[in-house]
Image (cartoon, rainbow, N blue to C red; front, side, top):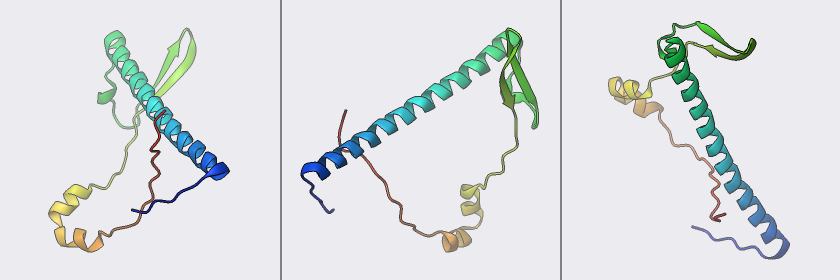
Length: 114
């Protein structure tokens, strides 16, 4: 580990950046939780009030939710193509090993608490 020290105005700027990182992470997490909660409430209300289970919708099904006559929300079931890396690694371990490589990644974590 390398420790790099700052003082004065540059130190203040670095502390402000660290605080901004920390605040942004908290906001991102808060917004994700709010989004997840909203989706859960919508799914529950559709099931309880209209007997519509969104998990059972077919691909390309679209639901428009109207509230007091206004189109309020669109729920659309889409097909998603995703690569199953775990299954591939089980079925083709040699190929998986051959095409797996380490890549550098840079992470910024604030060590300040707000």
